[in-house]
Amino acid sequence: MLKSDASDRLTPSDHYTQLRALLREAATLGSVAGLLNWDQETYMPPSAAEHRAAQMAMVAGLVHERRTSPRIGELIAACESSGVAKSDPDGAEAANLRCIRRDYDRATRLPTKLVTELAHTASLSQEAWKNAREKSDFSIFLPWLDKMVGLTRRKAECFGVPAGGELYDALLEEYEPGATAKEIDAIFKPLALRLSTLVQELTAKGKRPDDRFLNVSFAPAGQHEMGQFVLKHMGFDFNAGRLDTTTHPFCSGMAPGDTRLTTRYRGERFADALYGTMHEGGHGLYEQGLPKTGSSSRWGEPLADSTSLGIHESQSRMWENFVGRSREFWEWLLPHARKFSSGALDGFSPEQAYLAANIVTPSHIRVEADEATYNMHVMLRFELERAIFGGGLKVADLPGEWNSRFKRLLGVDVPDHHRGCLQDVHWSFGLIGYFPTYTLGNLYAAQFWETIRSDIPDLDPKMARGEFADLKSWLNDRIHRHGRRFQAGELCQRVTGRPLSSDPLMRHLEGKFKAVYGI
Ligand code: ZN
Image (cartoon, rainbow, N blue to C red; front, side, top):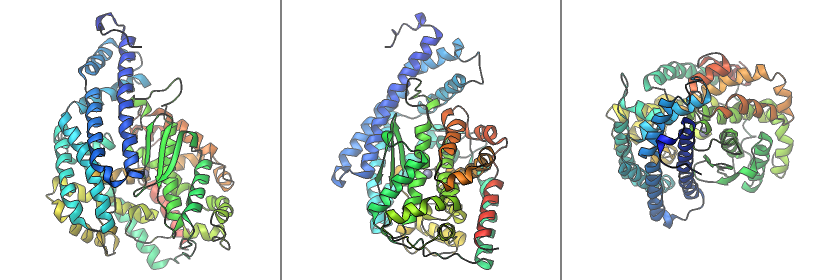
């Protein structure tokens, strides 16, 4: 129950309690949009698209009005001046209040009209993207992408260009607070060189493992059962989540006790779906590990939110690659996988599975790329987005630019737009500045993994028995439970004792792939 609005009679702790209650209400309204969006991505019939766009726009406008209400501004100011968090400036409440202030200041720069227009257009644009991707026809998506880029540019302009930075930084700030395009570029350029040297060495001198294991076909129903089996062992709570199918896999931690994972199945290449499911499962464990439920729930507050998309992605990539592509994982899973595949995987050894899961082949689809070439897919998108926002690249010229840069980076021709610039859903939503967080996630994952290995010395034999409880507890304790208390760089320093570096990732990739390729 909220106290009266007579602020002068409220104590500092009353102000804070009231602020938290208002934020919780806004988040609860926001979770309605999360559910509408999940439904649009999974089960909504196409003819509902127009009305869904209207619903999304209406809810987005209501949420924005709540988040930017003058009352919230007053309460923040009252908490700041009354010293709610002053006794412990490095504590959790101080961090919570700092993030609330930052979010409020950013949100109040956006007019409600722009917020609703973005939500409405994104919802329709997403349907156009699905249609364009299916037909591999960029012209269907072009007018929508053009609109989304225009609206996203207006949004970035509302935030403003940070001192010494570029317009693109204003978008990055939304997904990776504190990161700049210049800093990311300084990490990506030398990383690209080291990765392409590694890939060339593997191709020229190495022995490519046998890929027959990956090409086994088995029914989507069996794949779905196997995905659920693996998720349960990872510690994903199905009482507080689901796994469904979609066009472009994602995870939505939409509400307390409700984390939705999605994946996609084909008869062939079963491992793509398995790794996609494990990836989203890693995101799901982070969402379930945030303090959103129970009597000490911080739902609606920054302390119950993920700190950055880079850290979020570190969780998904860790389960997908450091766990899922390990020898120990296949020692555990293969006997079960044989059962789920109705015998289609009989005759393969765990070693064959492990080697096949680590084949390096430049290919077209980012989400199905191997660990070594994956980051090049991300760098391509980062360069193109930066070119659109600051380098004069026109949206209409995107496919041509994509194809020629792809050839330069990965050495392969792009046969059609379905496997080219139409493969990802992100731009249809206006998620620009989002892609670089994928590579940051790989870097964070590798650095965390080195610390995990020294903290849990018997991790390998445990993984070989399908026992992931210690790993999950470590992640819950060191990463998840803090929410946004620490920014990504600070969290990395606290957890690993060092600032983010690309060395752990390169140590992991070079060590593993040279052994797999017999170099
Ligand atoms: Zn992800």
